[in-house]
Image (tube, rainbow, N blue to C red):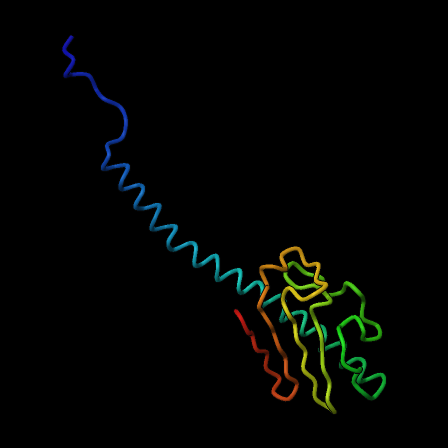
Length: 141
């Protein structure tokens, strides 16, 4: 039996390098996409919470004729202590200030007293709704 006729099994170095390059390219594309999804999730959760605070303030205005005084969301009569608890923002992260017929609602990521499971992911992020413009600003995203 001739040893040169034996078939060799396995991959060549070139084949392994090609696979490694393909994996590196896929990772370079996938990682930024996943980080973008996280930012969108943070913004969506904060936007929903800010909208809930705005709705509670409007309900309070409709029943009493005035906006509630400055404070956190759970200080609005009828608002629950854990209504807005989420993954990145906790009910205590939502606060509002009111001046006359205008108000500003703020969601502050990783605020003091926040018990959100992923609160450190929201550190440095502030979402603000100004009633004078009706626009939501995302700071830190």
